[in-house]
Every structure is written in structure tokens, then in C-alpha cells.
Image (cartoon, rainbow, N blue to C red; front, side, top):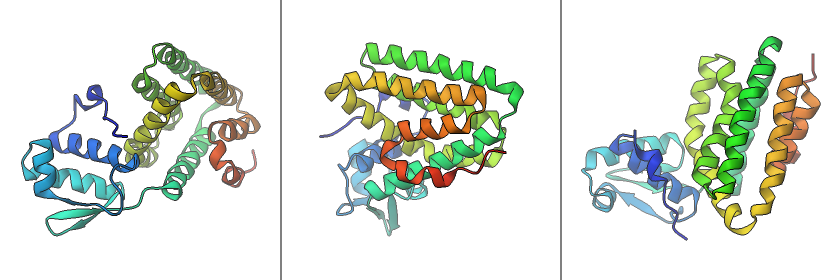
Length: 228
């Protein structure tokens, strides 16, 4: 089933970024697969743009490792369970690193900010707004990333963020339609995460990761160092 990229997310994007966003969602959603080839002319016609922004879009998707550039076009690369798992592995490593870098005197304020985003996530569920939920879910987790003031960590996070946005959005759209009651569990899991940050509790953090990323849970424990 075709999924549309949220129009409100496109507002401040360049034409190339807009084309990339639409194609990225289609690849991650499985509408475009490794059997598909994209040509500059085809995509330009589809989006009613010139070939220049299409080339810009292809560069962004290549950076995401979603396509392989070819002469005058690109081949779509596989994005399946293994690739999704790799993205979440990387995300967990980044957030674990950020957690370890936070200063104790900052933890209460950071947890408070996280809970503000959690409250907005709850409001989004009430209005069946998967787009707003996704935005605040990302912001909830970004609190730690930004708090580190680690330039290269933030750069790496921003590199995977477009893919994370698509993964979360697709998942939340599906859950809001098929299993809205599951959001009580999701909200509770995020509260455990905020508590872990507030109390500098690595055991709680490990539990939060297991709760939030239960499908990659077998890999989580290996990502933690012993608490100092």
C-alpha cells in the first residue's frame, strides 16, 4: 500500500530533499525494491522537476545506502529486516554513548524535557496523528544526543535521522490503525527511559531499550559497558 510523506515535513526542504524524502519512504516501505531501477528522466517526470534536483536526491539516497548510482540513474538497494536491524543497532549505540556522557547535574532537566515530548506523544495518539507522534518521539530521543554537545555524534545521528523518521512513521501509522491500545505500553516504556536518565540507572536504561526495541533485544546487552 502506497504511503505518502507528510506534507508538513516538506515545508523547509529543497526540491532535491523533497524528492529524496518521497523516494526514501517508498524504499523503506517496500514500494520500491531491489528489482527497481530509477532513471533521472523518469523521476523528474514523476515529480514534475528538472533533472538537477533529481541528481541531488540520488546523492542523498546514496548517502543513506538506499540506492547505487548508475549512469543517468540508480538501482534501488535492498532495505529489509537486516538493514532495519542495523539502523536500530546504530541508534542504540549512539543513545548509549550519549547516556554515558551526560553530566549528573543535567539529568533532572533533561528528563523533564523528555517527559514534555512524551506528553505531546500522548496527545498525538488521542488525535490519531502519527506524524506528530513521530516528530516528538524523535525529539524525545534527541534530548540526549544534543545534550552531549558532541559534534560528530550529532552529525552521525543526523545522517540516520531521515531513515529513522520513515521507520517510526510507518510503524506508528500501522499501529494507530491496527493496535491503538499498544500505545499505553509504548508510553510506559518511554517513561522508563526518562527515569533511567533522571537517576543515571544503566539497569533501567537496558530495560528501556529492551522494551522499546524488543525485536532487536538479543543484541542490546552487548552494547553496554559496565557502569563506572
